[in-house]
Image 1 (cartoon, rainbow, N blue to C red):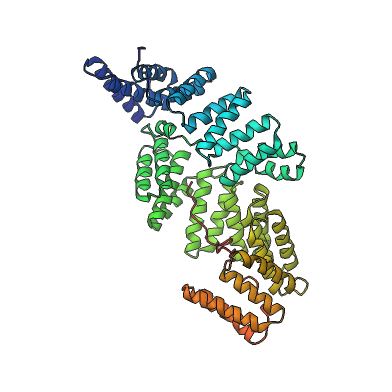
Image 2 (cartoon, rainbow, N blue to C red; image 1 turned 90 degrees about the horizontal axis):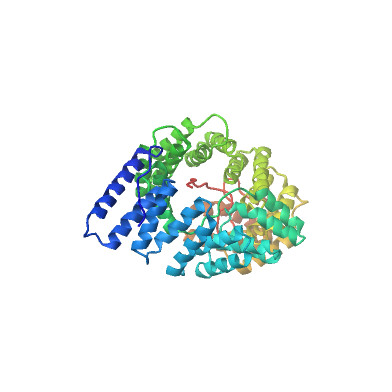
Length: 526
C-alpha cells in the first residue's frame, strides 16, 4: 500500500476543498478501523482519487488508485481512471498499460478501445490503432470517435478512399464534428479530387470529437463546482428533464457569483430549461440578463446564443425589428454561427430586405457550403425580390450539389410552373420534376405543386381536381389556414387561369416530407 496525503487544495473552489477534506477524513477512519473490508477501503481510496483527479491533482490521485487497484483488483474503474491520469501527464506508456488492464477486465469497454487507439495513432502505430477502432465500431456502430479514428488511421496509411468513407460517414452521423473537415479535405486531395477538398477546408473548426465515455463522465460530474453543475444540467437537458435541468443550473449559479463566461453560460442554459417548461417570461429574463452582462466587443459564445434565443422569443411575439437586432448581435459575437446567419437572413428576407438577406445566406454558405437551409433561403429571397432567373439558377445549382435534398427540386418545380416571369416558366420540365418526386412522396404540398404545373400546361380541369383533393386532405388534417390559402388557386383554375404566385410570402415553403425549410426558429440550447 502506498502512502496517501491530502494536497494543498487552496486553488480549488471552497466546495471542492470541503469535499476533499470530507473524503480524506472518511478514508482515514476506514483505515483505522480494522473491521473495514478490502472492498470498502478500496472504494474509499478510489473515490478520493477521483476527486483529486477531477480537480487536477494528479500526483496525489495516483497512489489512491494504486491502493484501490491492489485492494479490489477486479474493479475496472481504477485502471481506467489511471489510464486517463497518465494521459493527462503525458505518460503514454503507463497510460497504455492501464487501458490494457481495463480491457482485460472489460473487453467491450468502447471508450477504452478508442482512447487506446488514439494513443497508438499518436505513436504512429497505425495497424494497432486500426484494430482498436474497428473493435470499438463493431460494439458501437454510431460512434463518431471510432469512425474518426479509422479515418485518421487510413489517412496515415495513405488509403485515401477508406479515409473519405469513414470521415463522410462520421459527418453524416454528426454534422457538428467540424474538426473532421480538414483531414477529409486532405483525403480528397490525396484522391486528386480538389473540387471536393476545397469546401471542407472552409468548414473546418477546432472542435473535440467526443468519446462516448460514461466512466469519464463520473469524473466530470464529481466536483461541487459551477462547471460540474453546468455539465449535470446539460445531461438533464439531453434527457428532456426540464425542471431538473433548471434546478441544477440555479445551483450552479449560486456557486458562481462573478460575471464570467461560465456564469453567463449557466444563465443561458437556465433560460433554455425555463423556456422548455413553458415559463417564457422567466426564460426571457435570463436571456436578457446574459445580454446585459455581455462584453461590448469580442467573440463571446454565451452572448451570441442568448441574443439568438431572445430573437426566437421576439419572433414568436411578433417583435420582428427587435428580433433582427438580436440576430445581428448574435453573428457579431460569433461570426461563424451558421444558424444565426440563416435566421437573420430569413428575417431580413421576410422583411423585404432581399439584398441584405443574401449577404447572410452567403456568409452561412461560406462557413458550411452544405447548409441546405441557406441555399433554399437564398433562392426564396431572390424570388421574393422578383429576381426569378437568379432564383431558378440557384435552385438548379443546389440540386446538382445536393441531390439528396428533394426540396430543391420541389421548389424549382413550383418556380417553373408559376413564376410571373415568362423567361423562367417551363411547364413541361416542372411536370417532369414533380412526377418524379411524387413517386417517392405523395404529400399535399406536392399535390398543390402538381396542380400548378397542370394549370401552366393548360389542363385546368385536372388542376382543379387535384387542388380539390389536396384541400380535402388539408381539411381532414385540420389545416384551416392552408385550406383558405389554397382556395385562391382553386378559383383561378376554375376560371381557367394559371397560378402566378409560386411561394406565398406568409407561408413557409415545405419539402416533400413536410419539413419546414425556412421558417420557425428554435431556442438554441447547447
